[in-house]
Length: 518
Image (cartoon, rainbow, N blue to C red):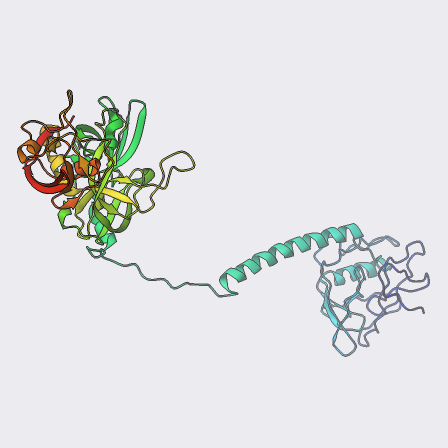
């Protein structure tokens, strides 16, 4: 007999007989229905299975198949419906019980042995393989007196099924791989070490401790009016609702604009203007109907030393409650700001504290705190490297300036009590064309008087064209610096001026007068 072809798609010769069912020869398949795939070599019939000639024997212990078509004998010559193959390939054993090659896709497995488990089918060499439909299919074929035709799914259906299996397997494998990568493997979860939550406040002198005490007393100010609007910062002075800030923060409100205040806790209230002074760049506003205010403690700016640690609090670019830290970089740094008005009434002269704590637009009016959470200055100005690319004001480069709190306190008290601040004066007019070292007093001419008659300078002996070189022993290099040194004092304070006249220097003692702000 010719050997069966080992490759799928080869057909047996017409006279090749299919494998017998349970050891009995079966009728030859019709010549017009050749097998689509080679059949395995017939297995040797079991010796202990009784069989009568021409009869098909079903093992008595085989359980009945519960499919509805079993138990009905089809007419002679009627083909039994094909049985679907299991989607998996089943391993086979070789002659010595070792695993052998799986049958080619579509190969019809032989019918089970009479003494085999009814749901196992023997391979070509005898070992059993799992096939739950084999017993029922064989019984139906025997009952018909003819072997069941071998029929397998089409190639397209096989490929489609394989694609589905591949997609599902890929998804499962990808998810499993991701899980293994993340959690470290089966039955293993990752737990990272972490410190437990810390209870209690930070030390009072730490940055966090200072911020915790100061933030409830710091507010963000929004101003609108006269086609302008702006954002700044302020801080609470007392339980009556008075808040100190910069004049240039509230200036857009004018006389008919609006001012709103937002506290650190989120509460918002309307504010009214109490008074402002452009010469000192300070203003006081007031809120009403707000309870549980937290006034900030005021320090003494005369006690500040270069190198002291400081904390700045404000709302840079409307980012409320921003805390930055640095040191006092310098003291008595003469700066001016403003100057948009022709008469110069909006120019502020400040003998400032310089700090490298980052200060940006929106920080104006906020407190500069010392290491004991006391206000030692009012953040007011910065020196910028230039305007930003968008045309707005540039940011901090570590050169920030604050009005000393001793000066701010005096002005705030005057604004609260009278609505106006006073400026100390010496009673002279200065020559702005002078480019030498110091500040030169104007000459008398026309309506201009270099020295005001009866004023503090006149009484002390200052004369026109005198050059003022020092104030209380500290050199001044310009008229601007002289004004700043004078403004750092109170009206009524005494000071010593060192003047140069005809190439000689002399000291003159005077008492500062007072003038109301314009």
